[in-house]
Length: 186
Image 1 (cartoon, rainbow, N blue to C red):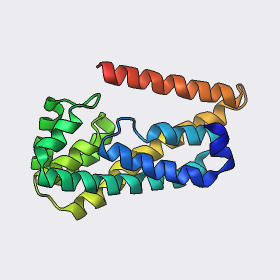
Image 2: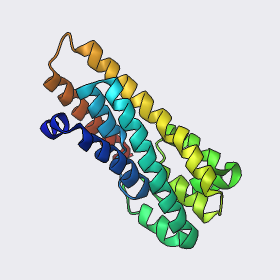
Image 3: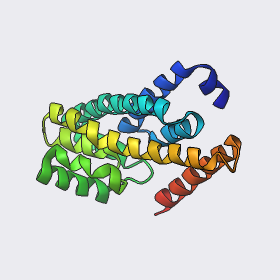
C-alpha cells in the first residue's frame, strides 16, 4: 500500500473520493482511516486535498442513498442494519432527529459515531431537500476529516524525533484496530 501511495499520488485522489463515496453508501470503515494514514505518511498539506475529495465522494454517495431511501426506504434501512454498528434503534433515533431538526441533524452525527449514510437515508425517506443534504454534508463530513488529519499530522511532526515512520504507521494501525474493535463490540 505504501509504495503505491508514494509513487502515484493521483491514486490517493481516487482512493479518497472512492472511500468517501463508499462509506456514504454501504462501506463501514470511515474515510478518516485512509486520511490519517496519509497525514502520518505525507503530512498535513497533501491530506487536506484528500479530505476535500473524500467529502466530495460523501456528497455523491449521500445523494445516491437519499434517492434510494426516497424510493424504497425499507430496503435502504434494512441494508444498513446489516452493517456493523448500525441497528434498528440507531436508524429510528436518526430518523426522529432528522424529522425534528431537518438535515442539520447530520452535523452532530460524525462526532457521535453515527454513520452519515443513516442521515442521508432519513433525509430521503422524509422527503427533505437534496440540496440541503448536499450543502450540509460538506461541513458535516469535512470538519471531522480535518480534525482527524490535523491530529495525525501533529503526531507525525511530534513523534518524528523519537520513532521511525514505520513505527508511526504501526501506531496508526494499532489505533484504528482498537477504535473499530471498541465500536463494533459496543
